[in-house]
Amino acid sequence: MRSRSRLVALCVGLNVAESALILGLDRNDAPSLATQASAIVPFGTFQDLRWMSVFQTSWLTFAAELAAMLLVRAAITALSVRLAWPHSSAPPGLGRLFAQGLLATAVSTVFLAPCVTLLFGLAVVPISWLFIAAVPLVVLVALVVHPIAVSGSWWRRALSVRALWWVVATFVILDLAAVATTEAPAPLRLVVAAAAGLFNAWAWVGLVSAIVVRAPARRIVPMVPAAMAVLVGVVIGGTLLGFNGAHPAAPGYSASGSRTDASGSTPLLIVSGYGSTWNGQPVHPIPGNFYELRFSYKGLASDGQPLPYDEADTVKPLGRLEQMLADQVEVLYRQTHRRVDIASESEGALIAETYVLADPGAPVRTAVYASPLVDPGRVWYPVSRPTGWGIASAEAMQLLGRGFQSAAPIDLSPRSSFLASLDEVAPLLQTMYSCSVPGVRQFALLPLADSVADPPGATFAFPTAVVPAFHGGLIPSHEGSTVISNVLEGRPAGTSGIWEFLEDAVRDAATAWQVPDLPVSDFPAGKSDPGACSALSRELATHLGEAK
Image 1: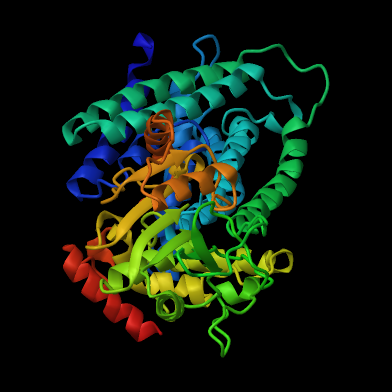
Image 2: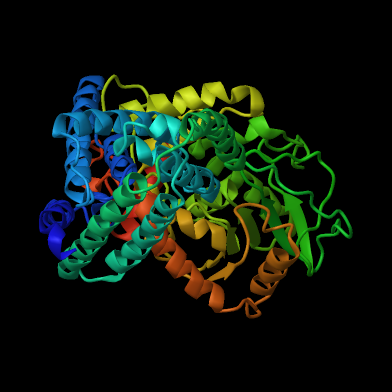
């Protein structure tokens, strides 16, 4: 690398400059993206698109940003390829390399746009399935499109195995850089950015050499065009997986031994998640001396019993759902004359937390949140306004929602009543779990997979436990129900500490691939975080009351 001083200066300079801008603008929530400013194609384009997904306020500004991104990223790519060109041969002219870089950036943008849309949705509703669907697709796109920026014969040559290894290595190093950036004090983030820039320069040299320095092709092998054709189907299928995974059907609950006699038993309300169903049959997922009832997303019958519900019933404004939970807890409290325990999951956990926080006097003894939505509403989009942050991303989510609506039983659009209600109270929801509720025991059961959806600064004001599981389905699972039973009966959770350690590492690494948060100061007027938990409780109660 000593003979590549200009390439090193370019890569290190880009990373340090972006990192300094982030620190200077107090956008400390997205320091990991700075390590990708000079990354090999298409990782640099991917980080550009994620910044754009959050920070555009109108279609005009989006069009301007997109045009500028295509031109600037193409120029950076062309210059990086030129400076990384093997010394054994003369490099093409900058004009030709710019044209190839522009084509590579444009193709990457087309394939990466659905992935960025899923990750924007992840910042709205932090469900790990969106991340799990999006990020592997990003790697697949990188494995396919990288030769376009380097060689004019990309369309008729087989992929270089050495180049593929450089793509994989870059993904791994950017993960490690995200961990280092997240854990490092602010001044040292510049050092991490510089070190990542040095690796990026090395990766450019390795990638370009692997594509350029190899034996002449004996015949045409259109591997990249064929792979791109396959990639279209993979991107569509992966996006569908993300949407379907965002509302996984709740696994069946065991109906064995459901308690019908409330005497001598602790009342327990089970609150399932988004897209769940219930046929009205009694269930008993939590072992122990509990009188269990299901929370109904449809409401209560005239005799006070919960009504059966289907997927569409779970799509209601958060304020309405919070009121329905309050009504059902009150009925159960009057029936048993005992404070109620709540075991909730995913959307149900969000409803339960907003309920106990907005109504501190609620007759609740213990609230357990399984697969909670940690810090939702980290970005914003206009629901009924013609302009506002994230307007293009909201439309992209709307298009994807419409495109996959036939495969989904519920409304997936960002303007659905539930998602729109989250957007309306953001960022009040971001700090909920950092607030305890006096007189209520709280506990969060976190699936390890959800760590990819959580921001690095997420904190809980009450005990938590991590289990090796995916989002959703913890309550009916053996391990999840056992932990919940232990917590409700005052016993240790009984989980291994190794999962907490892995959660921290995975969460930090995943920040490399999330979209940046919208700073609280940039949210529309009246939607700021009030700070203190007491003020948050009052603000949340006011906003939810207006939305009912």
